Image (tube, rainbow, N blue to C red; front, side):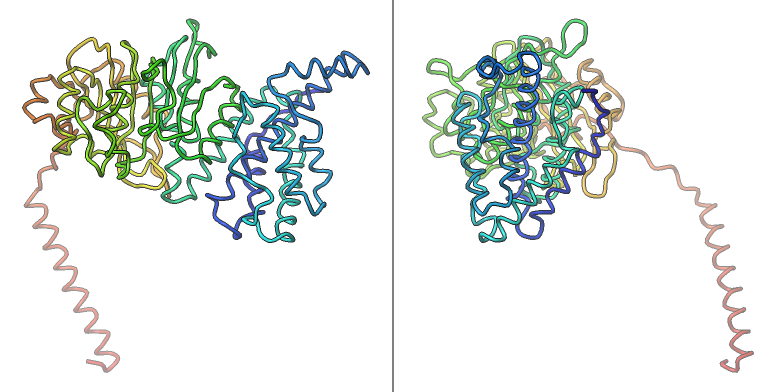
Length: 504
């Protein structure tokens, strides 16, 4: 079979159009799960069908041998669970129940990789409407995914992983864009993930961890930044994550699977209250830790922080109503002795006092903070406030802190602003070279930071003030006189018109 040219835009558009089945009936924060699960099922089915056909061409009618070969694939799909089988029954009144049974069976056959991924979704739920409406919507959904353009067989495309991964990320971003405040809970915009991935510099052999991984877009982007000595993408890494929201955790598991990160260990649970990634009696340690935690979470587990068995709050307990430093401290305790960490935070983390001020002082005195980057406003879904990136390094080579004010360089959009490739490159280069650039970046000494009472507000270090051009008083006075003369002439002309009309 000759492979066809990929039209990613056509695939993305077709997938987005499939949402028409649900639009108007309920919110995208609900129906996104049905679209993404059906896309995942279609991918599994097409890959399975393709591999089966390849074995059949090689082995002929030796079904027993074919089945033995298929059992060694990266996943197993019973015939009755394939998209094609469900498509055949799309007009049946029990189609929702059939889909649910298929998903449960897929989980059962692939427990190590997919256990629990579909537990929070039911295609037989009244969320989709009463029986008649539900069946109509499911038939339309199966019809949409049965279109030729959504044939995801690897023999059809050069790299189906890239095609599907791109499409999945496209849908996640579209859903996040339309989900209001909830959108930021499960997706970090592509420009920000690209920037953070380049800043933390993951290397072959690294263990990479995101304690608030959402749909795993940031985690995957950092993993994809791993390159070998020749600069080519490397698969020599291990991926770990934890997510508290069950629906979003499932999206992250599917996202990792679509990107061929089958061995990713992504746990479901509250990272602060119930960390799942442990080694012995302590937290598992990682080379790279990255996160976009929920901003200023007001119920993060303050009540149990004092007796934390993992010693995460030895530097101080964050305030009850703001959990930003709870996640930062967890991440620091999850680092290996030479580990690097990047975290996205609201600007309040840089300057708020009391408990947060004391924690900030401690981190700086321990020489863990490496870089502070101020980002443009309106980059994130669900909030227009500007954010910052903090880089920590347990093996810093100097005792200084680099401040970068990148808030003024971006592409303006109707709903969201974006970081351009040139913006990302400039921030990354400045970060890696640790250089001072007038009105853009500054390298501060520990003494300077101490003089500022450990306040990290970027304008204290990066002077972006632009002097206004001196005003030419004489020219302004002449302009006023010219305007007054033109106004007098216009008034005189108007009086003439009014006189001719007998109105004056």
